[in-house]
Amino acid sequence: MRLSVDTLQFLLFLYVQQLNKVSLRTSLIGEEWPSPRSRSPDLDGKSNSQNKNMDDHNHLVFVLNHLSELLELLLDPEQLTSSAHTTHDSMVSVEAVKALNFLIEGSIGQNEVIYPVHELALWQPILVTSGYSRLSKMFCFHKLQAWLRSVLGPNPFGTAVCFQKGKKLAWAQQVEGTTKRAKIACNIYSAPKGHKVVVMTQVYKQTLAKSSDQLVGAHIKIHRCNDCYIYLLSPLRSVSIEKCRNTTFVLGPVQTTTHVHSCDDVKVIAICRRLSVSSSSSCTFHCLTPTNPLIMSGNMSLTFAPYHTYYPMLEDHMARTGIATIPNYWNKPLCIGVDNNEMPVYQLLSPKELYVFVIPFEIEGDTMEIPGGLPPPYEKAIRQREQKIQNWQKTIKEAGLSKEQRKLFQNLVEQEFCEWLDQTGHRQQLDSLIPAPTSSKQTTC
Image (cartoon, rainbow, N blue to C red; front, side):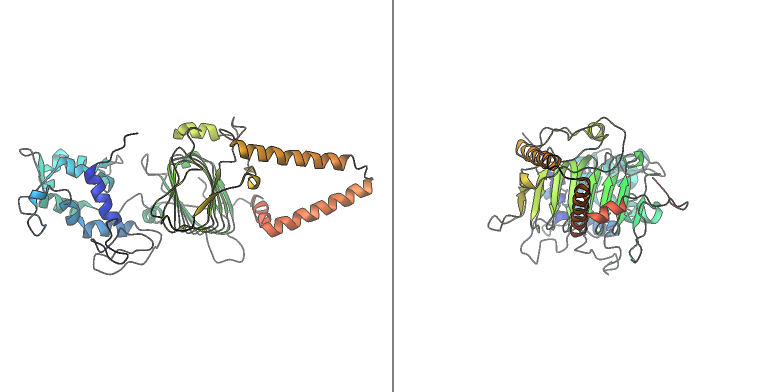
């Protein structure tokens, strides 16, 4: 395959991601794109430490603080002085402004239609303000910069705005004896197509399950969820999972990316266009994906396994996201930014350790089996295990036990099973499947 990227967009990407590092401690930029581990200073020079999982404001601050450098990267080299700064008559081409589209977009007035920044800059009523010259068919550098500074604002479809202005949802019940309160919000009642956002944070010891038209095409952001089972059985746009512990996520088909960051002991069961993992440990991924999973830096003890479940609407949802069963590269991850001399950061699940995952909800639909089936070694292991169960049942049937012996044997089996549920923590999952009383104050989606 022949792949290519826009050179100017790639240059901006390198800048904001700080990939051009000189050492582990310093870089040519001196400051990296805001993330939960690196905070961007505020406009007054102070660090903004609030809302650690919400970087929308910090992203705006970063762009405003570095807007001049970002635009200078788009200029032809001859337009820069010997000190690498612009002259008064520096001009920016339309093609160069298009490179900003992956960072900046917007709308006109209260219009819900979202446009890339270069289309807004070329909008007839503001050509003079944005600095566009019909004669040269280019933008004046300083006018373009001043216009961008005057109109830039935080992402209205980001995490922070979703909590501030979105609809609060009461999907999860408060767990008795804990001060942690689940926070779930969405903007799906007002967001235009492609900008639906659902945010979940601090869900604790819950089983949360949703299959809703309102989730279709939504960006899902999950943060700080512990000891949970979360089922989102709708076709989704993207999913990010951050700082979660001891939690199982069962996702509907994800049209773009499922990204897992800074998680520990989580299990992700998903069909997605691409999967990426960073700074996580002891995590298991049962995935069906047409691209190689990306293993970034900071990971330990990852396990990859084939997709091993289904629900009745799954194939319909796969069709809506455009994901097929072939190709499937679940077992061919790529390690990026990992030293080849380090210990292997991932392994493939042994066929003997795979058990088909059963989704415990009744949903109407036609899918009755795992899409694409299991790889032959795993299918063989499943059949061998089923044969052992049949042999065991046959042995019990032919043992000639009396009624009292059968009852005693059944009690012993149930006792062992209950002990196994307690030891493995699965009792919590079974107990949480019992529907809670519906509250009139709850908001559903």
